[in-house]
Image (cartoon, rainbow, N blue to C red; front, top):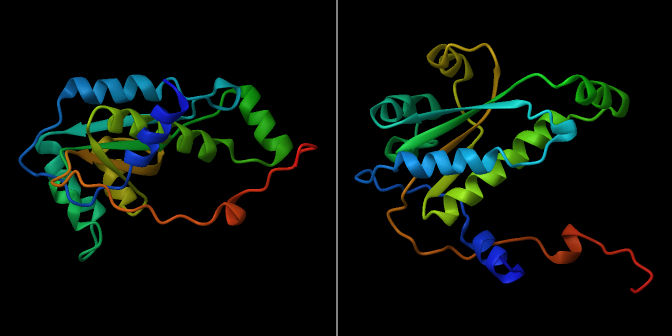
Amino acid sequence: MDFNEFKELAKKRESCRDFDPEREVEIEKIEACLETMKLAPSACNAQPYYYYLVHGDEAKNLSKYFQLGKMNSFTKDAAAFAIVTEENYNLSAKIGSSVKNQDYKSIDIGISAAYFTAEATSLGLSTCIIGWFDEEKLQKFLKTKSKIRLVIAMGYAKNDDLREKKRKTSDALYKIISEDK
């Protein structure tokens, strides 16, 4: 893959809020997303997360845990959900996090979600990362006490037209410091 191929993939990846309720996601594509997520780097290779994948009728029943009024009402049409929990560090990541006062878990979870959603995009799927959910009800459903950090709704978009990306200017996002500049 060259730079332009990756850039095109990044341009295609966007949050979908209009899933096609008639299309199921093939389990093989979900498994491919999970396998790619496993390749994500993490502090001290701790991989302090766990993915629960809810698919089919179970996903339809689960969508109510992501909604409040009209907020996230689009989740009713998602074909599947990846629910990401925060798990324990390994010893070296725990020590490093404490010494450096860094929350490596959040960073690692974000990176793994980026890998998961990029793979989904490469397979023609659409995703939306959700931070608003009823954590207690999800924990009960999953039979876990682990902290739920995010949910990834997935499915096929009703409309494949890409929206124009609205981004900050380069000056607002980065500065290159180099002897060459």
